[in-house]
Length: 283
Image (cartoon, rainbow, N blue to C red; front, side, top):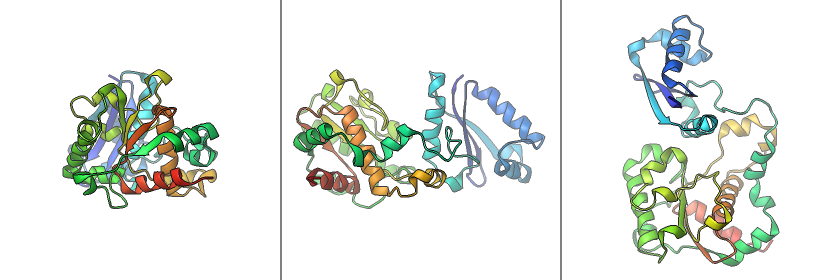
């Protein structure tokens, strides 16, 4: 059974997140290594000795159909946690050198290098949805709709879900086939409602030209992972606004029908301001 799993300390809440093509066999391997003091995570090994087997739980977080997606989805789950809350010694599933992959560098600095044609299409055709009513009452703090926010604000997540529903169904005249939305993958299920489940496209996703949409929603407030900025020398000058704007613009270009008029709802005031400022910039 392929999937993403976690080993959680019931007493202090710390977690080890991993992936495997056979999650239950992998759990047995972890227990064996921990029993003999051979586990690769010295942090988990230390607490295993301090506590007992009964103080830890094993849970499958998500089943994965395609084996090649395991590491990518595992990384998304890891990114949703604070580093201080993890037993994982290495909080990246793919990085093993001090040089960042070229495609990753292109993504995080995309706003500085966006093709001129795409830039002009966006500035001519992209309209930020003007918030009305309850849409104005949330998302105004700097960290609203960030990964950390999602883990701590269950009631407000429901309000975000209804705001998205309000935008798609009541404040626009869009049809289901014209819509798509995104958020952090590990929290997407919390924002699903009737009619929008199949319209979710991950932050790093892309639609074919014929499937690109005219009504979008970017329900994420993005901040760079501190582990990545420390790991890669190329990211030493990456500021949080460049990172956030780059991810948003790349997603819009990948999913939006930018050659025609399109509308986007950006629940986070911070993200909305970044996009608005960029659209008004003539450079």
